[in-house]
View 1 (spheres, rainbow, N blue to C red):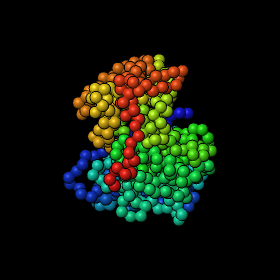
View 2 (cartoon, rainbow, N blue to C red):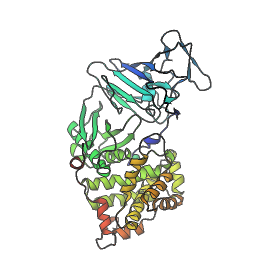
View 3 (cartoon, protein in one colour):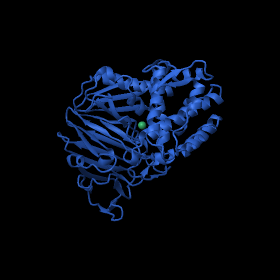
View 4 (cartoon, protein in one colour):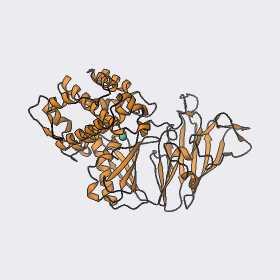
Length: 487
Ligand SMILES: [Zn+2]
């Protein structure tokens, strides 16, 4: 199905508060050590606290109690379970350190399916793990806390993780969102291909399942998508990217779907059709779509029209700019998408359709109506500013000023802020009109201005139209980012 599942950035499994920064404690935090066995059947976790002791410890993954042992405190102290919310309260602690141990049965956890995220998933001999499934954590995560995890792997095994490296072998830094937003890492016997692309340390691993496409072709495809997205921002919008490539049954389309995630660091999970050939991967849309999410601000799930709509518009724009498709093909793809959006849905306002998208699966309507909104805002900005401003400026401003994942933003709040920042207030007014409308957004005026004509479903380009130069500018090829971006 032509969609990418998700709003990964906005999925809160369990919203946990964070403590304000404190001046008093220079080094407080905790360190996990996770030891995997040879068969990847279990993970033994030890967690020691430094400089402070938590009042409560929680496990943020519901439904896993049969697979996770209760943590045991080393020494005299013990943990008492609080009946109201299941959190664990340390009792009888002496001053200083506290270390806690528990074990996660990965085989049992792989059998738990409930909710929107599978805690553990086997792919051949490899295993995909949601960090939240593995780790107990303090209920309050101090923002000044330094938290690390060290993975102890059997010989010959590797881990591909989104987390930034910390001093020590297989040791990484964790951030407060790493367990309560959607995220995953993989452990197994795969190779990890590493390369710096457009300013980002990109790691690619193909999980253990049959795949016709070659590893070099998979890497070339991932790197091209990174470059395409970097073209908008000047460099890739994250310092590190982990790409988990997951071969899955299929042939066409070459990439079945994908997920973009930022919990703990930027990562993508890409489901590649196992019968797709090398030459079918370059220029396909899912890779560019997912990586574009990593440059967008964090928004609420029930406002997918902005997150998914704008990313859907840019999946075509950025592929044209990267030379993966030509200008006419990009507009054709957009027109075809609008056609799907018009056919499926339209009985209720876009605002309500977005709110219920996860339940009603009206993805085409929400994604493509949002893309139509993006097009109209882009055209209105270019027209009002005589070509000096565009939607690119909005996206780049958001990335600079509203990037990071400290908190999610309301979509209209983002558009209003961009209106103020650019001094050309067109975006929020267009959005408010479209959101309240049951009909698919009208793009007739924008098409006429740009010189886009539809003849029997086929897009034709008219260079005499008043904004024909802007139409070309939207899709115009950009300079290679590798040569223009300082490292
Ligand atoms: Zn998406």
